[in-house]
Structures are given as C-alpha cells and as structure tokens.
Image (cartoon, rainbow over all chains, first blue to last red; front, side):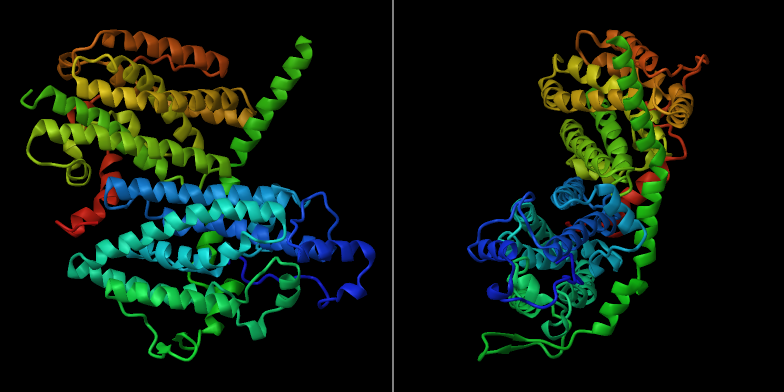
Length: 330
Length: 247
C-alpha cells in the first residue's frame, strides 16, 4: 500500500516446466503456502522486489510520522494528544519492524536510509499532502489507515515469512488507528457547524489521494502478475480500491458527510459502487516529486538525519572508548 | 497564598509534566535516529498521562468544575506554575536531553518521596508515576554519560547544554510555603540527593558543572520566561478558537 510503484524485476511469469530445479522447488513451496524464510534459496527478482516493496513501506511509515506529528503539539485535548503521540510512535515502530524485515534480505538500514534521503527510494504519495486542520488527523486515520489496512490484511499472507509476520503485528495496530481517526470524525460531525465544516473539507481533500494509495489501475500496473505468482501480492490494485470504496462510502454517509464524487453510484449488478475517474496525472506528478509537500517532507527527513549525525557519532565514539577500556583492563 | 496549597502544588507537578511533555512531543519524526523517535514519544506519552492525573487533582481540589483539559488549554502563561527549566526551548538534541536529565534527576526522587505523602491523592499519583520517572532517569543518565564521554563534538554540545541550563535547576528543589504545606517526610532531602546524583553523573560523563551559583526562579509563582507564551499559543489554539467545542 505504502509501496505504490513497485516494479518486480522478473521477466514475465514462467511456468513450472520452464524453471530450473531450484526455482521450481521455490515456486512449489510458494504455491503450497509454505513461507519463504531469509536463508532459503529465492530468485534474485523475488529478493529485489521484496527489498524494494518492504523498504518503500518502511520509508512511508517514517515519512508518515511528519504530517500527523505536525498536529501533536496542537491536539485539542490531553487525551487526543496522548492518542496521537501513541499513534505516531506506532508508525515509527512499524518502520523499525519493516527495516528489520528488509535487512533479512541482505540490505542494511543505513543503505535504505541513504536511498530515501537521496530521493532514490520512494514512499507513499499520500504523505505529500498537507495536514491543514485538526480534521485532517481524523481523515488520515479513517481514510489513509483504512486504505492501508485494506492492502495490509492480504500482506499478512505474503509468501515471505518476515514480511508476513511484521504485517500481522502492524495490522493489529492499524485497526486502532483507523478507529481513532473515525472517532475524531464522529466528534467533529456531531459538533459545531465550524467543526462539521472542517470535517467535510478534510474528506474533500483526502478522498482522491486515498484512492490513489492503491496504485495505478491494473491495466497500467507493471509486473503485477509476477508479484501475484510469487504471492507477494494477493489482490489487484483495482480490486482493493473497489473494496475500500464499498467499505468507506457507508461510513461517510453515517457521518453525514458527502463523498466528493458526482459519479459515485451504487451498482446493484456488481454489488458495489461505481465511482469517477481518478486524476492519475496528479498521482504521477506527486510520485515524481511535485506534490504539495514533497520538498518539505524530504527536507525534514534530511535535516533530522544531518542534525543528528553528531548524536550517532557520539554514541559510537563512546562505544569504541568503552571497548578499548575493557580490552585494556583485561 | 490564597489558593489551597494542594491546588497550587498539583498545578506545579502537572504543569511541569505538561510543558515538558509538550516540548518533547515536538521531536516526533525529527529525532536523530528511529529508536529516539520511539523513545521520546514514550517519554512524552508518560508525561502527558501524568499531567492528566495532576491537573485532574488540581481541578477537583479547586472545586470550580474545571477539568484537566480546562486547566491545560484555557489558562494563560501567568497562571502556569511549572519550573522555568521545563519551558526552556528544545534547542539541539543535546539541549533536549540535558533538560530531560536535569528534570528527571529531580522528578524521580520527588515522586518517590511524594509516594509517602499524607494526602492520599498525592501519594497515589506519585506511586503511579514513579516507575515511569525511574525509567526516564535511567535513560537520560545513560545518554548523558555516553554523549558527554563520546566524541569531541558530542562532549562539547553536552557541556554547552549543561552551561546553559544549570542555572534553572535551583528552582526545582527550592521549597516555598506551598511545598512545605505538603505533609511528607523527606522533602528537604531532595536538594542533597539531586546534587549528589547529578554531580556523580557529570563526573562519569566528563562534564563540568558551572561555577556560578546564581539560580533563576519565578516559574512556580507564575513568572515565566518568554518561551512559555508561544508554546501555550501553539498548544491551546483549537480550544481557544472554538470555545466550548467538544473534541
């Protein structure tokens, strides 16, 4: 979810008969739903795809701290403040599990950090939108975490063991996050006209970017088939997006908010909603660096990293001194 | 002193936690390394939790129907009773850590002492908070030692932080009539414990306590530095701009 533009490096999906014995054994394991563990043999493409997907997911958690973190100091009650701190802390924790999961594939956290800060690695486009009012904190929990859960629930069954296990933990926390977001929206919608107004405004601004979180339409999605054969991915982008719309529209109705899509209509035949075309041009602009906050987000991460260099170096220097003293004492 | 000393005292304890928790929470997403983002969020969370207990008690003692939120979000700077130390700006990460250590080294023995207070409500809050404060102190002591006795730069930054903040520590343990009205054995020993603990830690950290003995004060009586106003303006914005709204 938080990895929208993952391109696997496989060259089309091979059949079992076309595979060499090692690859065939690997694919048979995947087909039998036996988890692949870090020390098992795996195709290079599988490893690379996973490193990219897991690290993008981790980077999204890290950058994702910023838009919500910006409201911690302005949270309107002590309870909301505590909940928001806990939520942003969970996100940092998710980043940590995910970096650890990626490390089992042979990449270091420093390498991944370098890729994020140099702009080589991507993170989810959603975090390049600004949080302008308190209602945005509600909308992020409700819509963004809602969309994340939609994608991460199937990732719990991902063929790669460490990723699958990380997702099981992450999903438990994400459902709390979604509930706290919806709870903020409920309070606002039952509140003053000004509160209801910011709630509607937040839905208006976050609806489309949330739908974009599922990535490009299946027709345009690169190498989806290979990721599905490897069981890194279980559902197509469009299937997940449809599920999200079907789940979320009744929630908006319950809040008394209107979904900003004139083409939204229940379709009895398919048992789901039809919805309007997504502005993919905007999506690709945001992914390529032209979203409203791309520059700010990257600047904040780079500043945190460079301002913190002395701290990390200081701790290393102490560790070396201590080691030298221990050696001298022996 | 017109107000009930327990009201005043609970405000002091609560405002210390609130103002420090507020500043620490601003690091979320901006710390030098992911583990620090997580740890600082933890500390902030504990402090905000303790704020809710102390300000809840203050509101109850006052008896005018003010909740912990009313006290946190609807008082002006002059009505805040936190020590000046906790309102000092975050600065670089070294200043944030030094401020935390200088506070924790007082907070932990203070809560330990208050757990024996005659007033059961105070004793209960202290009892609930003391484990968290012990963890905060362990963590900040460890970092002060490692960074003080780390690289040249980390040493220099920690020394600069100590030089800048030391003169705000006297107010923590300088007891006045409000403190003395809280009946508890051992309150007068805190100053000595504080000085012992900090000097031992700074020795190990190869840091030097400044020679100057002047100590700022005023926060406990509502006379603050310029730093507090903007911090409250940021924190109180929603409650102030939407009077009476529920969140």
